[in-house]
Every structure is written in C-alpha cells, then in structure tokens.
Image (cartoon, rainbow, N blue to C red):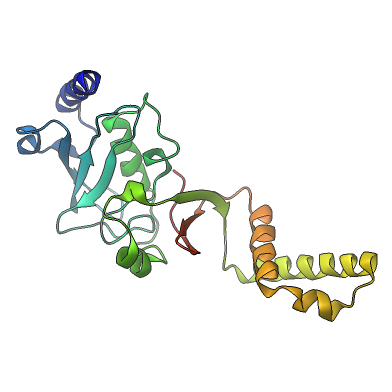
Length: 224
C-alpha cells in the first residue's frame, strides 16, 4: 500500500506539472482519495473530436503499478469511436495484457489521445448494444482477446471460402471421403476454420481484435 501511495503521489505531481496535451486533472477528484482521478480532456485540433470535451476516470488498486488501473470514459459525453463503448469502456491493450509497471497515467492518456486522433470515422463498436447490456461495470472484468483479424471484406471472404473448399477437396482425395460428407460433417467446425483461415490471411492487419464473452465471441477494438 505504501509503495502504491508513493508511486501515485509521484505521478500526480508529474501530471500536474506537465499534463498531456489537452488534458487537465480535476483537482477535486483527488482531494479525498488519491486512488481515483478524473481527467478532463479536449479533442485534439484537426481531428474529428476537435472542440469536444470528455472525462476519463482512473481507479487504482492497492497493487498499482503492478496491476493496471481501471480506465474508462465517464460523464455525459462519451466519444463515438470504434473502440469506445457507449458506457465508456475502452478497448485498449495497454489497459490489460500489455500493461507494464513502467507505464503511467500520462502514457495511458497519450495512448488514448493517439487513439482518438487517428480515428477516421465516428462510429461505435459493432457489438456495442450487446456488450453494454451484458458487461461487468468494471471493464477489467472483460476478457479481451486482441488478435489480428479483418473480417466482412467480401473479396477476402470469397478467397477464404475458395481456399477452404480446396483444402477440403484435397483432404477428400487423401481419405477417399465424399465431398458432401466433408461439407456436412460439422458446420460449426467449418465456420471456425473459415475464421481461422481468415485470420491467417490477415496477420499483417492490427485493426480488429476479438473479445470472448460467455459462450460467444464479438468483435472489438484496436490494438494501439
């Protein structure tokens, strides 16, 4: 606990003296407890969010900095972004599996600024409605799976299907199994193979990542 308090005091002073561009600390938020910060943020000039104002909520556990902070947008204005859910949850890898004790509030803020500034189209994640209805209030409770997937591109999907059918044909010749039996053997398996094949074709893209939730999967976010 003492090391966490010492680290947060150091970061608080650094943030107050040299805040990231367009960000200021709400001093009232740290008057009673240093373990919860509210950071006021303005959209960067020349971006889709220029002139807009947002708020970020940081919550720190007793294991900080070895445990990543809980970070989410809060308040009345949640930025409309492909990696930000309407409840304020942010799909960002450094908030979970890519977190390191070497990172700080400032580095998280800079990553979020970069994420918003690079946005080309204002829209919610495709699974926003489902996620907001079913998720835990704490975004860290979500099991995010960051992967290099690009999907729903018609030409690429056709290419994957062609590769899959070709592979099935080769397997049929090896085993002497009729194509009909191969295609009907396991629709679910074929669907999963299609996704896996698609992922292999798209290993150079980092735009999409998947989040497993319950018994299904939904798409979410960018690995920034």
